[in-house]
Length: 149
Image (cartoon, rainbow, N blue to C red; front, side, top):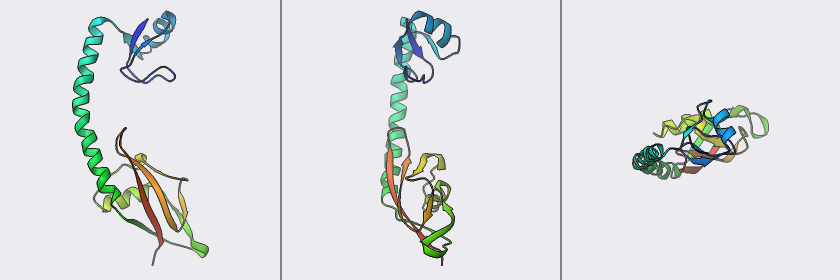
């Protein structure tokens, strides 16, 4: 049985994929839960047209994300934080702080698209973070945590 997936299904495929499954799995699980529809010839034509239109729109989004990524790569970000004995921070520096620092530089990035390697930062020094601007555009950003004066 051929089906068009309406959403991502683990171990099967991603949204808008045409997949072949056993009849019972499609009829009794995927279709009733709204995860898939039958892949009729007319549904396949509609899917192809939607994918073609979406690819054209997504190209503009990817270009904008790439432009933002190039601008972010050139930034030098220093985050000031209160420091105790031995370069240990009071509290920690998280993705929220990094998002705020990026916003001060003029680049608005949601904190959930930022991942700091090793989790939160608890000591002074240089660190790296990955910022996902789009599914296809990920930029590495180096930043430094310094002592607040």
